[in-house]
Length: 216
Image 1: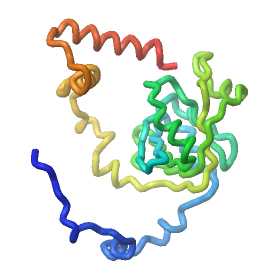
Image 2: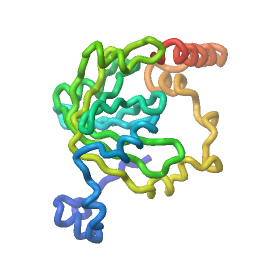
Image 3: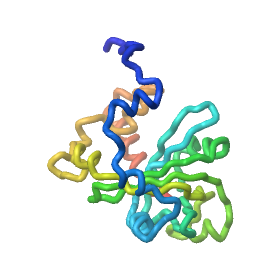
Image 4: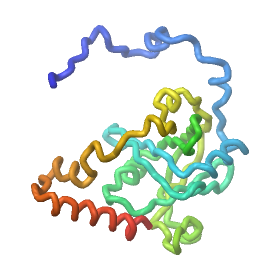
């Protein structure tokens, strides 16, 4: 594939030029932004089993990380404060390291079957309070820490993206078997996957077994 090059004359570099490309923002879109978690936002959060977390490091590099647990896993501590348990992962700690140097955070709450989403922005801290961690436990296993967010902006996002993608429509579900397994892809991208199919299947099976023992 040839490298794609952008012509400088086609790059938008200022907000005035950007806004000239679009109609004026709708009044409701301006007014819907809140600085507290109202009853509707809280009800949405309690239903959500999945969120995406956006952070940014000191070098300006952005990162988005998924988090999932039983519905309502993000604890509502008060109308301006949320807590997200940090479950076992790959220990890269990208999100957590970013928060240390840049506390600005963005959350996207997703509910299966809902086309609309909830966006929450705020300031994050990494907290090891035992009482809070105990509250966030699952199967008697407390997280090592929690991401506590002081909310500064809350608003519901419209359904267009999910409707365009037909994300929840079973007729548009794709067969995961049409791509290599996660382990095969990771090995191809790093140390190299074994040629032996049996050895590869064992690695795939071992990964599945680890999900059952290391989720919490």
